[in-house]
Length: 112
Length: 112
Image (tube, rainbow over the protein chains, first blue to last red):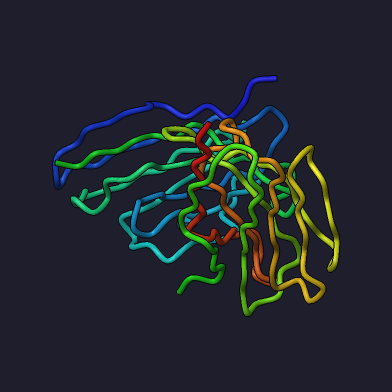
């Protein structure tokens, strides 16, 4: 079956711009989570959605937002980009989070 | 605050050697997961351990969950170059919902 699909794979944006990243989970998975990965901080939790409802939110500024659609596809948005937002953004889906997630290949965002 | 501490941070060994990676916390976890990540890709789930004291084997990999469910270890027997990658432990502290906390990872290099 198809895995978790993230688009785009690579993105270069300028400081101050905004960006939207997309994630299509495995069919039947209703839980979708987003993570930011940087060399210094590792993987940090952004937010988790289940059936279109945000169940958990990590410790990130309000510039980071997300949503989930009725077909479980999810998007995350970062507004007013900063250089420090450069990272690999990973999306993961699950039937039930405690049992493990399937990750996408990520979107590599570079802010210049 | 890093809830999960992994050690060692880096490990470089020769093919055929054994190794152990540790994942420690002061928090109790309902379950812990181990992932392996290769450069430019998302983490891939290796195993989920749920019961305190549980031992799970995956070919040459042995995973153990501590009795108090605060720590875990990954032991690789007779490492091979294909084992090279970043090993991550992850879990959600009991009662915290579905926000996975990740350790910073152990970067393993196995040379022929």
